[in-house]
Image (cartoon, rainbow, N blue to C red):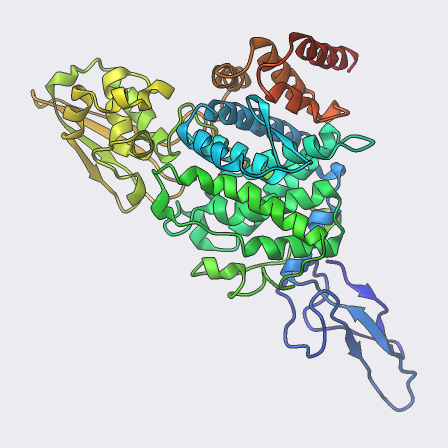
Length: 534
């Protein structure tokens, strides 16, 4: 942050701290000042020289890392949202709503919803696709977050995490449960959404470990929990001190092991991130306090990483959101992102019209990611995390869809036969990073002929993003499983004009699911009217 206070002077000389000149909040926080609080450390310089007029100097030093996050959460404005950020945000929101609505059909969603029904309160929020069900806001955020990640169909960022699922359900639950005058606008939603995304991205850059596909902790359960808390704090208008406390509280909620990948429990990581982040913001609002340097220390957020090098965030007047620099990957089918390279490479091999009954050997050259190495998956969740299953399905069917992960498809004799022919190779240059990894698929026939294709960037990756029409079609296919066509189109039009929306709770009216045609028609008419006058 910029230096504040009176310049230290004795005569005409200025006294500056070593290294302070020109710094804008990018240095590590000062430590070891006894009796000073981290948020308001004050340094006193006094120089006494005969014949000079000496002045006492009071100067506020650089903020701690934790305080710099609180400053950014509280201080970011709509003006920080560039056109690119707004467009990318709207794509993320539309995609997240679609995969969340689709996820309301899953077993894990129904189990978590059944559990959440035991909680009740006078303040409630809608559950997506369930017109007759409302839950307390933290549990609505929980089950909607579970739905978003229930099929591993949600967006992915770099460094690796699923950024939208922990944040969007929280903001929509709040806008539905706590209507205000004036209402929360579309720009309010976009700003708080980006605060939540930004906090996650900045935290992921504090460790080189986070740049790779995770091995120990599932990132949404770590950074997602803090992103959820930050977004909720921004949306609720918490002051800077309470923003800091929300982050500190959220750290104590964070964390989930990768061992639960490819199980029904993994979607709970995103649902819990949403729920616990919102709880952290509520508790901060009520005055609960945490460690004021929670992001600065290895015993704080650094406990989750073997390498941890936190840095204070840039000054607000020169702040650029990470979403302006780094795009988002969006999936064409519901499976681990790493399998999408395999699918595109296998699709290229499939173009040779190979007879699958004459395949002798299949070699996949992929990065070493153990939890996606599943030679013989027996459930939909294992199949979504199997390089082998994705390759064989593409070679056999020429396509991968939602139906590809049904039990009847996973257990097909032809699939099981091909799976026995798959071998994995992990070249040393194939680093397990979503930014650099590649996949080669080599298929050898019984005749000895070999066909090899490579994918460096799949369609849907941030370097090759989905076309808008394909993204909207994905949303239509996903959301039409629970919504009427009128509601589906209403959401598409609402998100497209989100920055012009006066009341973002209009989205929840569509998201509730089947409802009175008159109400939906009124919503659609409002959206179309807004659009025509824009």
